Length: 146
Image (cartoon, rainbow, N blue to C red):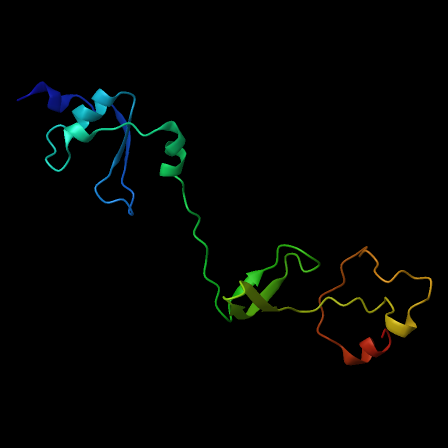
């Protein structure tokens, strides 16, 4: 028996990318370590060992984040605006315009007057001091503020 079979390989990792046919990436400190690792594997050629340039190393192992597909009827959680941390139901997805239309429980401030009932010196847009409670739309209460 040959003593080289019992020595550990001096390589760090081996990576095969799905899109690149016939190319494998072997990470090692020296090119000779790679040559020793692939010695005896008939599918790999010893004469085509090349070092990956440093500029291309980061692109070689970039992980692509999996984006979930959104479908009508699914539930999502809002991350921004007044509706932060609220659940919303997807009404429909417009793929052409990259938009999603949602159904939300409204947060209407019934204490702030709007339209003609608003005081003339009151500013039109007021920054929210507190977030209104999530309630279903009430026709009777909205008549008093609009």
